[in-house]
Length: 271
Ligand code: HPA
Image (cartoon, rainbow, N blue to C red; front, side, top):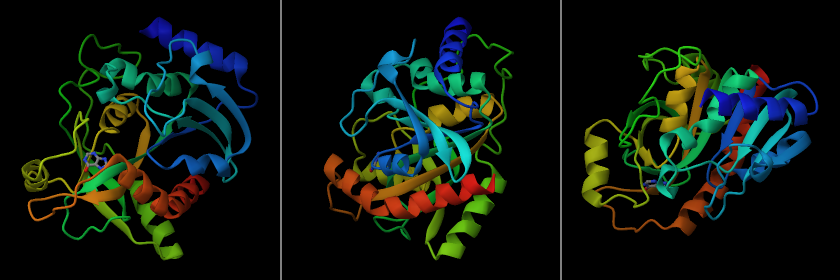
């Protein structure tokens, strides 16, 4: 694994024009428009990057994009790797290891999620304050490489309190309704049964989705600061009759996109 990470990092060092970014952004469902705000873009398709898995899902194209956002050098992942696609946890989190190897110290993650919190509305955006890992495997299972991080990393502040507070400031300055909540990470690809949404709410979840948790675990292991944001694309629970669809999720995510972009841009500017 270490050799693969080194190989991919040195490929990027040879290909990337300009300084290596310290900020990485994983673009989730329907949030591709962030790319339009990145200046001086350099696209590197996953297919050209050694050891990079290739993404398969509709609505996710596969590129690393290097450029400048709000005046800062960033690397954006256009298309992420989901566990439900069949990748193992090491593949899902491989890009985060590469970010670590090139010197990234802050990670932004975004996703679409179903809301269980009764205060939430479709189209709301939510700062992820914490998560519950319900994936069947932890990405750190197996041999620990101490050069990558500790055997037993703390997850007490998996999401950086300073970035969360800054997001609240950005949102209130712009008059954006920004919720807070706990993200439950599940393997998917099924959406939840009403009883499952109810169960996730009872155990402390506010929103549920099929990504993010593996990458955030590895980012914490790597010592990065993390900010996560979800767009609530559907609601679930025992009293909710609407059936979530992939199309509805994409549509709601697109509608919330401008607010999400404003928060991320504001945060990047503040770093
Ligand atoms: N459940 C799981 N993942 C999701 C959902 C959901 O309701 N909405 C968007 N991603």
